[in-house]
Image (cartoon, rainbow, N blue to C red; front, side, top):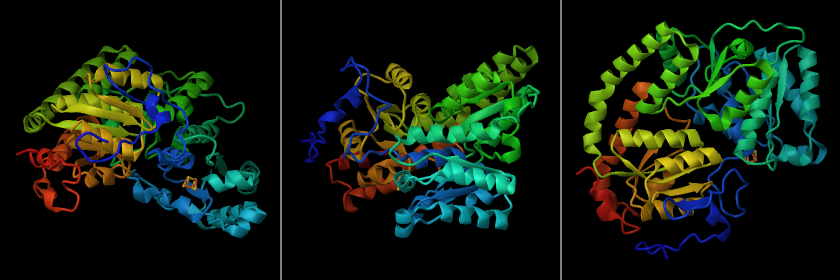
Length: 469
Ligand code: SF4
């Protein structure tokens, strides 16, 4: 039984190597593997991984070749913003039915592309494969190639059918699609232009624009972001940049490595989450240019921005004494930054996990957290509940799938996923984050959870009602 909760342990033997408590186990955490069958992992599917990366390309047609249900994963649950086209906000589907499964869906896909091209005249179409397409074996490459030749546009298949792996395989499928798109024409000479590509930012609530502005103030220019607020024309210039900075390494490190090998563009891992990581990332970018003027401007920016938010951060920090956080997010880079960001506002992290973290990221997480912190990869809801309660967490940071878990436990929750509507990047984002922590942890609603069916379900009433008294 789970201690003091009256609930059974989620004892799944095959999962034990993917969960550890800092200071207790010495072996490497098992990660970057397939989910254990029957565990109802919190991970999303391959197609979802691909869609995360590509959907912010604003002037593309995003056509999902599959049953209509897959297409529900669309802009409506994303917060990526556009400064121009809003074509990406549509989610098109071939709506495969039983007869298509029996006789094949290629003709239906061809007709769908024909209709969409006639109606929207796009320069770029992404065609996503889904689970059922992997089963029936439609030849996406052939259909897309024929359509591209017929219309003289880019029609790029995204090989994201299920059963080829997990969400990480979808990231890679999306990066392969992007590599096809940015490939220069044969004999085209690449003219480098001293600008920066920003990989792994999807312009949620305008976050790319915040970083673009910082770079501008440093005397640098953002070329194109992958893929927030990008479009066909801007992505086509990607090979001209002289530096790639990579925020979400889980989704984009493969693309960064490919661009380094193919186009000789070096890359830097960065994070603009939290004050410490934002300042550190800006300094490291400036340093690569070895230009005194850029370094001076960067220090001025850091000084001004840090001073502007210091008062807010301090006042929130005072309210969070003794609070404990649990984190369960998609990638390792975000988890690492969140540990530091919570430290900045005086909150301890007692449980931390990711869907797609890599070995080196878990090593960093292990170095950063205190003894006793539970670290877990590819968790299921039962495990998350167990450790959040056991460790006495006051809030959970997660995404759309974790929100109900927290609320069911009567626990504060912060959305760090793609459907949020406020930026969390940069200095302004650090204040937004602290404000969101305050508004959820210190909400008066927790005083009443004992009377809201389930508020004291796990014997946690005393802990909950003591929040921010
Ligand atoms: S691609 Fe497969 S797992 Fe993903 S939403 Fe569609 S049916 Fe579900």
